[in-house]
Every structure is written in C-alpha cells, then in structure tokens.
Image 1 (tube, protein in one colour):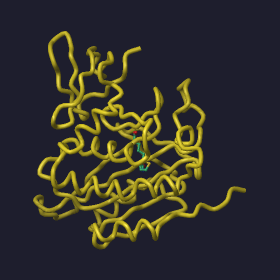
Image 2 (spheres, rainbow, N blue to C red):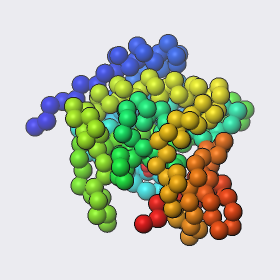
Image 3 (cartoon, rainbow, N blue to C red):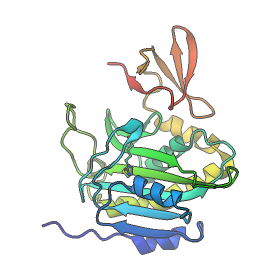
Amino acid sequence: MTAPLRWPSEAIWEAVAPLLPGFTVEVLAEVDSTNSELMRRARAGQADPVLLVAERQTAGRGRRGRGWASSPGDSLTFSLGLPLAPADWSGLSLAVGVAVAEALGPGIGLKWPNDLWVGPRKLAGILVETATPAGADPAARRPTIVGIGINIAPRAPAQGMDIAPADLRALWPQADAPAALQRIALPLVRALLAFEREGFAPFEAGFAARDVLRGRPVTLSDGTRGTAAGIGPGGGLLVHTAAGLQVVSSSEVSVRPAS
Ligand code: BTN
C-alpha cells in the first residue's frame, strides 16, 4: 500500500490568499476531471478563486477533445479557477506554460502552444477554459479554469505510442505531487494576475528561452510544412513556409516537429 499524500494546502492558502481574496484550496480523492468540476461550479455561479486538486481523475480531459491519463501518486492533476478580465486574452495558455516551467526549474522546454517537454517527450499539459455563467454581464470578469497535469513518476507509453512520456523525477528525483504543487501554486497565481494586468508581453522572453520548436522543421495539422521561427506578440507561432511567414493560432492548427 502506498503512503497517503500530504498536501501543502495550508501553506499554499497562506501564500495565495493575500493575492486572491476568497481563495480556498480543496483536495478530492476522486473526481471525473478537475476542469469539468470547476466548469460546472462556474456555470452555477460559484466565482470565488479555488485551487482544486484531485488524487484520481476518472475522465481527465486534454486539449482538442483528447483524454488525459494519470494515476494516483504518479501524477499531479489540478485546476485553478479564478475570475479574470484581461484586455486581451491571447497568449494566456502560453503564459501559464512559462510560469509552470519556470517554477519547476531548468531542463524543461515549451512546445507551442503550452506543452512542457523534457527532451523530445511531453512532461505536462495545460488546458485553459473559460465559462460564461447564465445571465452574466459579458463585460464582467470571466471565470477562468487553468487545468494542469504533470507526470511525476515514469509512465508506460500511451496506447498507440512507442515512447513513454517524460517524468519530473528524471529532473528532480525527490519530486512528488504535493511538492510539485507547492512549487507551482504561487508563481502560477502571480503569473495569471500579471497576465490580467499586462497581457502576454512580460512572458515573451521566458517563452523564447524555452521554445523547443524555434528553428526546427515543423508540419502543421493542415499539412503545411515550414520552419518554426518563434512566437508573435499575441502568442501565435511564426512559421516560415514556402508561401511566406505565417502566424499560426493555436485554435486553428496543431503543429509537430517534422521527423
Ligand atoms: C493537454 O496537454 O492536452 C492538456 C492536459 C491537461 C490535463 C489537466 S489534468 C487537470 C485538469 N483536469 C483535466 O481534466 N484536465 C486538466
């Protein structure tokens, strides 16, 4: 039997509550998906900032309708929900990626738009969603759910894949899910508040420093080939293609390094 996890809920609350009035930390033994749970709450009008951690997700969700697999103790799965009203939302999920990578330390790259990689393998994924509660004023702050999944211990390759994902213990041998959460929580909140005030600009250099695609041949999901050339001011991926420089937005296409 594995030892129960000891979550640093109180320490996180003490650090974050002065920045986010009404903030709470909640740890669930099991939920379908921390993002789905916070989306349900947001739609029901529960707007207070909350950090929701799940030891087990039974229906974890990834980007583009994919699932997200995790196992208790070997993964960290949580969502931060808070109301935000930035003047410009573009680049939000990239800013989250920069904050999480910087909190976890060197050796972690960012694969546009917001996957964390170690070498050529994925360490963590980010799913940002916003909710519009029934009857809400469209100009009001919008409930924003930032979901993060991190592989803490080595995992077997996902079905249909031949290489295993990356794990945090390869970089930080003593890492466990509670310690990783403690490192991330405060920097993540600070980053979201900075993004709300100043947009993506303060995160551009941090992204560039960890950009694993820059200078590499890439193939877009619409079949276009080119060479990744960094990130534009709104967080779009710049790609040199035969037709000239394209700015790719993450809602349009996905991108993979060409083999
Ligand atoms: C991706 O890379 O596709 C994004 C993965 C996001 C997974 C996290 S785990 C916590 C939160 N709850 C979910 O259902 N998804 C996010």
